[in-house]
Amino acid sequence: MEHNSSNFIRSIIKEDLETGKRENVYTRFPPEPNGYLHIGHAKSIVINFGLADDFNGKTNLRFDDTNPLKEDKEYVDAIKEDVAWLGYEWDGMFFASDYFEEMYNRAILLIKKGKAYVDDLSADEIREYRGTLKEPGKESPHRARSIEENLDLFDRMRKGEFANGEKVLRAKIDMSSPNINLRDPVIYRVAHATHHNTGDKWCIYPMYAFAHPLEDAIEGITHSLCTTEFEDQRPLYNWVVEECEMDNKPQQIEFGRLNITNTVMSKRKLKQLVDEKFVDGWDDPRMPTISGLRRKGYTPEAIREFVKETGVSKGSGLVDEMMLEHFVREDLKLKAPRTMGILKPLKVVITNYPEDQVEMLEAEINPEVPEMGTRQIPFSREIYIEQEDFMEDPPKKYFRLFPGNEVRLKHAYFIKCEDVIKDEDGNVVEIHCTYDPETKSGTGFTGRKVKGTLHWVDAKNALPAEFRLYEPLIVENEKEEDGEVQEEAEEKTFLDHVNPHSLEVLQGFIEPNMDSIQAHDKFQFFRHGYFNVDPKHTTQEKTVFNRIVSLKSSFKLK
Ligand code: ATP
Ligand code: MG
Image (cartoon, rainbow, N blue to C red):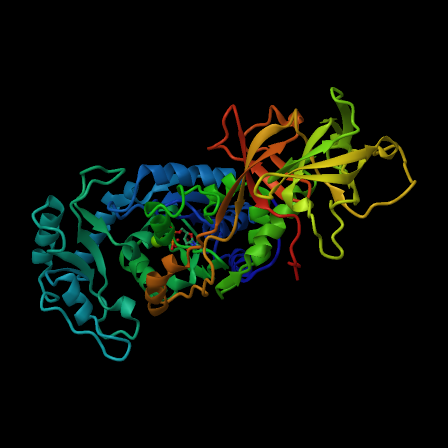
């Protein structure tokens, strides 16, 4: 795979190899299995696997499963499926929980060195004592405990003698450090909970900031790539690696998070959308999850190309969702067969066409790729067109069907509107037309020209199909900033921005030659855009299509 565009992380790695600071490149993608992966994770995946690939290095898939309360095997399986689907092969697959024993031993080492202590303060008190950016923190009264007492208490924490929150183990660093992360961070807590991997073996769990550097060091990771919200934690990361006397010393490098307009990009919020039934699961096609994008019809190629185009930098970028759409259109342009489907049917009777006749018309599968060959489309006396392709009383410059007007039927004949049939309430229910046999498509007819071309399907032979059209899930989304104040404000409001019209379901018809299509087959429907056969809702009786993207947009790649 090509990943050769230059960026600041690549430069650092290159220099490390050239100066002999490193002999190899070993990265990891470290998701916490507390939700499904989203397109932001795809960025991290492409960066980690891509960089290692470029330098003949290795990449681990590591589940950062240090919080038994939120993690689940379902998420582990989904994450593996998504990484593989994106086209990446991991070297090792590990769990942070594989290292619990070693982490525990390193914590004991810290205690023995006088660098960690058991604290009895409550979570609230610890927060209070921590101080602020302007004021230094205050030392806990338990900070001066003897090594022996700490060893004994930590052992009893492990044995389950204390309730959740009753005791914690803290690193002893500096309560007046200007970096709040270094004010004696909690490194172990009591949590009486069953872990998806280790069951009930443990009732104390390492905190992320302690566990993560150890995981990296244990696996021999050279470059630990993460997003910029961890920048302030880098001194703590280095402290843990140093004080725990790890042989391998990984280097943490931060890059900016990917954000996309009109959606949310946080597992916690996505989980809320699932739990509160705003969507029909993590793989709902409206979700920015990898599984949602897959179900909608995105290809791994499109996602990878999109992510590469967003680049690697320190700043967190808000990217227009239209850019994502651009890449799937580009990818499908030459791959997807063309076809015709009617989303909102209106019946047309061609009164001068022989009653029982059916003729087969030939059409190219993809005019841009003639090798894809041709398909057969039946044509007969009754067809469906789109409701929006007829107007009884059209404005100027309306070139589709209206009384007295003639249009071209794609791949077929010219038809002329002769009569409009209405029901009792005055709704148009049927159009009567005549056709001109001289105008058959492909025969080189040049007698006269018409301005409108309509797509259609044969009414008798067409197959029923359901079309699902999507709009953004979130509207008026403000830029997601790193930082707690913004987070909290947004927390309250993001559900208010859920778009109630994000899904439209239509019952229509497709060409009968589509009778053996499979889940995930992709098509370009004339005028309507690219569609994917939905793997969940499609049945023997009815194919369900998800619209991946419409045909055109105003978006231009810079
Ligand atoms: P979320 O906030 O969605 O829960 P997270 O950062 O907590 O994301 P992790 O499971 O810890 O999720 O993420 C695994 C890796 O993916 C981390 O290295 C993280 O930095 C990276 N990552 C997560 N979100 C993004 C994003 N939007 N852009 C780039 N990288 C991301
Ligand atoms: Mg997280």
